[in-house]
Image 1 (cartoon, rainbow, N blue to C red):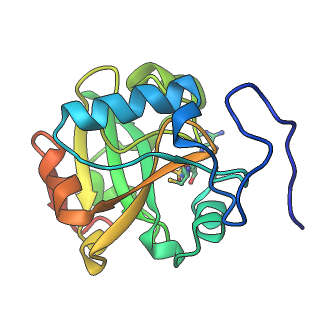
Image 2 (cartoon, rainbow, N blue to C red):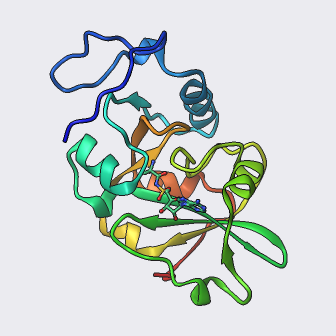
Length: 175
Ligand code: 5CA
């Protein structure tokens, strides 16, 4: 069933058929991500959608790509602190492969570590540096789609450009 949401100041109500909303009026959080992506040298365009992109499945449906092409930005915790793992939407991270004593972060820990709430965590552009592991399965796709700060904002990016923008990215099979 198609979900609806109340129009708000940053969302145009007269959306075009693609349901892509105005790039001029992104949610402030999505604007922040857009600016950080540009600072990292990624020439990508954040898009805000009327439909939810809160989960990989919802994002895939909203964008019209296969779920594997959606990047999950998952936060884990081990003895050294938070750890971000980017994983294809159709794969499940094996925490044992991430390392010993790894558990998934709670919602409050996700926000503390990244500056963003679950459902909108971007793959890069966090409030502070974050150890990052990239599951090699993402390399199946030339282009992937990622969260851009809110549960309605995403951006497409060339997979290798994304990996190149992640300082110290540890790319390996963890799913
Ligand atoms: N915007 C979408 C597509 S990019 C997105 O952010 N997907 S995600 O996979 O990166 O974020 C959702 C993930 O957050 C879920 O797969 C789940 O692993 C995690 N999550 C959801 N609820 C909780 C919770 N209560 N505590 C900890 N993690 C959670």
